Length: 619
Image (cartoon, rainbow, N blue to C red; front, side, top):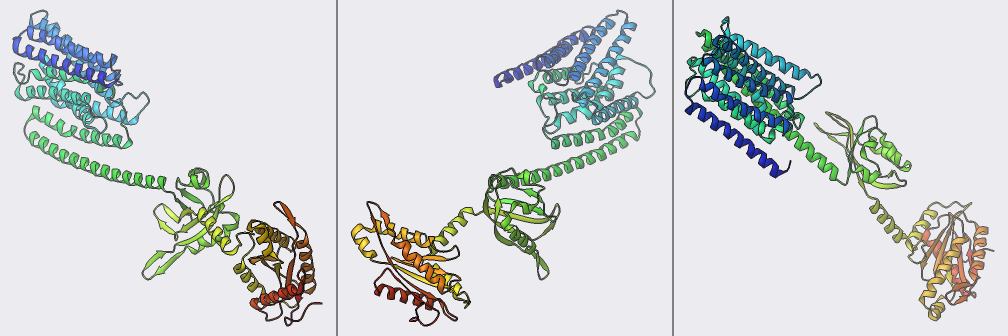
């Protein structure tokens, strides 16, 4: 239903209720007592029946049993008024009087059935809570009638209203109307109007009970009729379509049950008060006292329910904040139980690992790590113990960088922060924070590469070569000593001057490639700067040093194809074997000296030194 249609329907409901009030005012003020008074009340009840018909046909109210029973009750009241008018006019007063009382009893029975329909809430399946509420209502109404009527057997119209109507509607008011109208999530114009209708009837009938059967009392007479206006408003208002539906949340349903329980507690003092009306004496004191005690208990019960609701709302707010933080956090939060399985993983796992977080719960945490880093992860978990710092135990936090496997293949670097073992309610294990650092690792690798690599040829630079040379000469094996070859391209400056620096760079790339191709995988090739290159041969010896030098000279003589032309270059090579106690600086200096010796000897040649003095050449 659109907003405009809803507004129009609500306006029609208020107008219909106002029409009933106007008719009641005319009946009470303009129609004299006598046969015409009950006859004039018939249109009031029929207007109520029209409102109930609107609830069922126009608004499709879910509480079908309730509204059908209410409609039937209003029809019975209308028939009772018509029969009463005939009886007061002298038409078969004995027979019609009994019929009138029977119609009134049927009408009140319809009100009880309507209340049962509310308690059932439209549920067709067996519902033990609804059955218990129905039993409570029936027991309360039976006890209420017994408290008022006692052992009296006379039945008259006024006796039915006072002795039966008052207790029945009082029970309905306490058990049904009050919880329905004030329960959280179910308040509406329709429920409030039903509560008002029950209050008006109880006030009118209870007033007669206290003041005597004074039907002509101007203050009490219109109240039950005005209740028809409230029923009409409830039935015609569009909010009737939601009356009887289940609460929006389990918390609202729980609060409604607490409220219904509290209202049911008021039945006992109400019964005592009703009994006191007929018996008097100390019953008034007991009724008032028990009502006060029950009211205090109900107030405390309601206060506890509000406190529980505030605590629940605070908990829900805290959980919502935590869920939002975890859902929007870039880092992955995981909880690893003591047996090594994952018991929780935050939603960010999907962006990091490629699958929803729920798919990793229950799996072994070690499976996340790349096989190369599983040992490191185990060590980190073992190191994340508890460290005692005096009287307080502070959990140790361990940071480590590991690679984790992505569902699409490959691995990503993460920085893992592992807490010490936590023992708390619902948590016995480790809390792990995973932050992706793949870009940082790649950047660090690139920085290391740039710091140790010649930018033109991709070979190691002088710094990195010196570090490798220092490692090789730290402990020299006389049976397989390392060796260094110092290579200098002959007449490289003339190539740069004649062909340009671009051609010179191409030549250096070609030289670097040929030097790398003629050595073993564990040998080291480096560009020391300009046209100078160096090779570190592990496990060399004099024979291998000579063999490598000869092959390099031959490889470098092969013409190099440059853009526009081919040129032939040569190189001067100096080499030296490391002897016991030889340092990296000494070995490199000896190879450099030997290279200059070869260059002075005519270039395109090599001079190789043994493990002795620099002037000792290999034969």
